[in-house]
Length: 448
Image 1 (cartoon, rainbow, N blue to C red):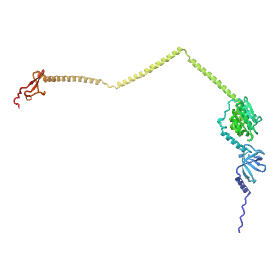
Image 2: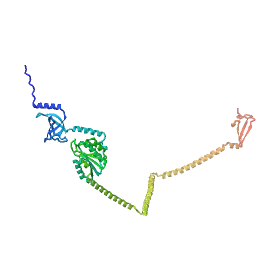
Image 3: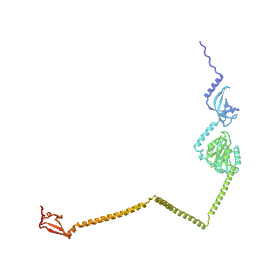
Image 4: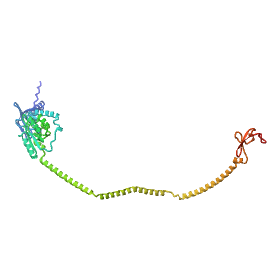
């Protein structure tokens, strides 16, 4: 029979590591509330403290990388809420909280209410930039809504006295924290709006916890700021503090002192602007006088007597007349010159026609003599033909006693065979015609 294997043995380190992994898996990041005790800030920047309640306590550590983002430094006895991971510190075997974030107790619920109200009012358009009014350029009176005992009031008055001593200040006193402070703040703002004696209204208070500033996170304060007829600047808390009043205001200031600086420009700036405007006005006046003087001198130089003006215009007219005459003659002279050049070129291109003219004249004379001789010859020939024609004219033959005999059909009778007895024939004589009858026809001898 074999001996059973001995069970495995864990080291303390392995045990602590296993327990640490089990704790981290079993308890993810969660919010834990308690009271600060034994708070220590190491030279490295890490925070070590104990978180306790009436019945128990647990060690906690917040490393420098996380602690630097906390908006406050815890003190002994502060009630806080931490977002932490449950783990085990292996060297001592103690379990502890590894803190990722810290806030004052109750801040979680307040912050949730803050976000809900902010979302509601934003949806209604109370925070729209288009609704917000610009601050006046020159402020004569500034209203302040705050507590008369507040340090913020002293800061604002000191700033205004230093920067703008000419500004009148009206205080609308009200408590800025505690029970019923929100309604009293809203009432003070409404009073300032109704009296309408200020150019701009400051709503301010110094820094504090979220509970101290909670009066400025009430809906009544935001709506009263929006309904105020005077531009409102809100300077509540420090630069990192934001309230509902900041979003509803026409302008948010990071601190009350900054609100006073935004409300009124320094007196020195106004004086510098006035001096600048005075310098600009003097320069503009001197320039206007200088320009007017130059214009007057120029007009005086142009102002001449009527006779001189007429003489000047006459000279201008003569010049224009000469220019018109020149403009009229110049194209004509140019055309004449061009024509002369063309004529010279044309004459240079003409051939020498004297010899051909002589030859043509000789040919003309020869042609004339030839035509005359030919006409003479033709005239003589025509005369001869005319004489011959005259000799052959039947009328001349008739005048010599001859006659032309035609039968009844009008045909010339040339032989007796064409004649028949008892027929009529017509005789054409030199001076007329005669119709005669044929008694008998004598045939020529040897005829058929």
